[in-house]
Length: 340
Image (cartoon, rainbow, N blue to C red; front, side, top):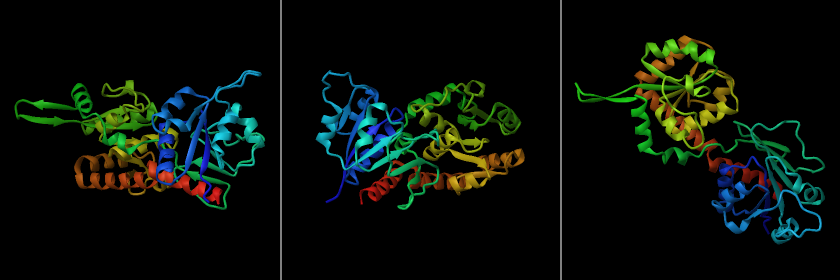
């Protein structure tokens, strides 16, 4: 009989992307998952995605001689789990139980984790660490799976009216009354330091291109807000390209995943890391070479065929490696290794 009952201890790092991936594990792969957390906002969010009766909110600490309803032990007795999954940091509330259980434990670590962090006194069967390149093996105790960070559907369901409003307000489109035509300006997002952005400004000015600074929106050529989870689909829809100057980091990965999901062309350094990450889904320039960045911008402006090719490759790569289904499939493989 398949061991498929899981108790998921959701730490404060849990977000909607994780929960949607767990929903896929339930619906597609047949896992029976019950989530326990001490955070009301996480419980509320999860109840909007998963079955309400599989989500439990417990107090952050137990008061001696005070009856808690439902108690953590009541929940565990009811679920009778076959394994435990810890998502993010483990709260002290759950330490004592997990130290005594003989159940296999999987720890999904989150972006920005401290490599030296350990679960004190708790034996972990498998650790899942976030990585841009997946590496899952039955023999390894630590495996690498991309963290779910972006949902492709968000970029398909963006608010078109809001996009048009932003374009008009920022001067990205205008109506030429003389020729009765719509004129459009090119907007390029840049991820780099202020000095790096300033070095690029002459290139943009020569090509009549506007710049949007991801790190410093107030220094942009357009009046757009800082990017967040809600407005990212709209802002990336406005941008014709994303130029990345920095080495790969957490913000860079998130920015490029948003580009992949939105169809925004990426222009990145020609380094081994980026080539492994993006393959043919980016235009590349020699690191720190302004002439090569200019050549990429010229391709962006002059070759609609090349733009489309890069977009299609990036979109397929996103779905294959970084979409909810891809991440859930890799998680399922790890769960299967532990269950059998």
